[in-house]
Length: 427
Image (cartoon, rainbow, N blue to C red; front, top):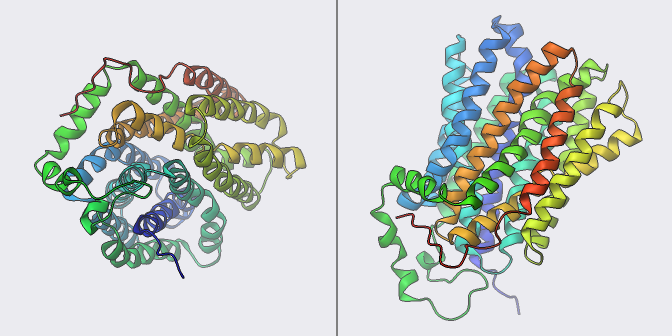
């Protein structure tokens, strides 16, 4: 007799695809800079402005997206986000001025990918899973992170062989195809379809049946801001946000933005550098899923300390190994970096939930994720300035490595749960 699959796994599967699709666009921006420059004659600064606006809106949208999902529903917000990604990608096909790129790339797609980022996955995992929550967070984190890197060689090939418009069109069509799937499968809570979360025991409670009406009157913006104000009174929030700021610095900020230019400085071809980032993406899939499994079994704080420590070793060793060719030691460093690329997500999200509760945890995680993207934005600018001043990226790599080591130590100071007698009010 076949055992019926709990709907939670179908919801997680569709969420995985949505995160993968939004990550695909994030991986396309870097390889389109030069084609835009060559075709339209725009300056690097004008194109970079669109990327900067995208990153800022991407990070700031996340906590408000969690609140909007509380107010209007996961299905509605995720569908609207996919529409924004689709429209933004489509508009690049007919743009003629750089300000239009800022609107399409920066504003529309920034809003879309921000609403379908890790906070979306954390909200789904917290609502639909009691058991295997860490594993699901690992899977969804892998979709978001690995998609950014694994798709890079494919998108680079499309841009080089048939043009950047085909890459934009691919993202547009993929987003459009996902909208009916999201609408058919996603629901706000298991109670909406008469179920309890996966792994929960007993019958559906009256409280769970009434949750939607309880949340429907909340102001989305106020919910997000109140969540920040309340969480900011706790030491745990600043430790979580600070370590995730470093996470963004050492991933999106320096590796995603500057690895290919740094490899080029050492005489390495762009396709070879993209292949190395793909290796990071592949092993991130293993590392993030494995991190989810470990988070269900071990203290998340110790896992974070180990991940940031290993990342620090990889970053400190990278400038010593970069060269015109791909040598085995460099591959080992990229594998090591891949194993903890976003392995930090499951333990960080779980700690947010344990400290601030199942309903408020995702909103706090939204602000923690905003710190991640701000860290990435600061690192992108700082690393570029270091390159201009020093003539190479060596100092930038060493700085990132040192910050990762500090984050490893800071992770040990995070409380495991909300301190006894402390109440975090987010209403």
